[in-house]
Amino acid sequence: MRKLKIIQILPTLNTGGIERGVLDFNKYLVNNGHQSYIISNGGRQVKNIIEDGGIHIHLQVSQKNIFTLFQAKKLADIINEISPDIVHIRSRIPAWVLHTSKLFLKSPRPLIFSTFHGLYSTPFYSRIMASFDRVISISKTVDKYVNKNYERYLKKSTRLIYEGSDEQFFYPKFSPTQDFIDQFYEKLPDLKDKKLVTYPGKLLSWRGQESFIKLVSDLPKDFAGLILGSSNSVKPKYYRSLKKLIEDYRLKNRVYFYDIKDDIREIYYLSEVVLNLSSKPEAFGMKLLEAAMMEKKIAGWDHGGSGEILEMCFPQGKVEFNNFDALSQKVKELAESDEVPNNVFLTSTLLHEKTMAFYVDALNKNY
View (cartoon, rainbow, N blue to C red):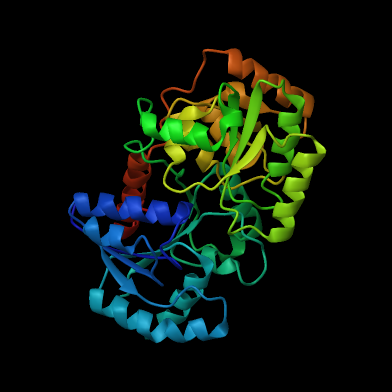
């Protein structure tokens, strides 16, 4: 395979699933002899891009206003200077900047790929993600959604390439230090000697934290719940409503919030079951996948992308949507069971190999 020049564009490089994926792919590209460029408005992960051998170019492509489109000429100048084989767009705001920059791109211009990382709403603003040369869907749920809502904007049929998780970071034999375990239970002594059920994910009204709190109220008292997510980024009104719900269910010593930093693996390790109970179907179930890769039991509603992850990685954890009796029974059964996910195959390596194969197919005009 000839060596390629790849540009990835996203709003910022802070925390999040898209950012993590860009970092992983940057490292893969460099390790395989390709030239990797990242364009973003910066963030704390820039140093990791550079340390892994990629090149970061700072450009304001993150703000939701008309003035961001004025960056189109600068973006075109950058692309013209690099002369890449592929430009891969990861988000809607920079997608509009890239679309506008086509006015200034030299011919022949690079192939432009986009990835639908979410179930974007259907108005004018979102359709831009379907309008580029090639489009990637990260799950069957997303693929069906894109083809239903954006088919008329697609230039080619979509390619389903499942997201993957870093198998070198999330692996079964990982264990935290004893110092971490001691400090964790010193901070949260009520959780010691409890069967810990964990709920990772952003604190949003549709993400299912209310359902998780109800679940814990339905479980025996030897279970406790941990809600992961930063309280700094949540809307205060929603955070207060969750705290009140915990009080209403009399769970103040059984359900706690935990501001996750770089210790997600440690929390998975301490967990008996990791759950996803989103009230709306999600594009993917990354947190379930991460936990499954560590051979931790996972469970949740059988819908959307998280339902797909359960089906592929641990079908024992599937529960009919909104059936709380079945959910509490399922969690109790899993806690007593020796069965765990194994042979989880949705790795970052597989994702990267399939993405590169798609690039090559497109460049060779095979797709």
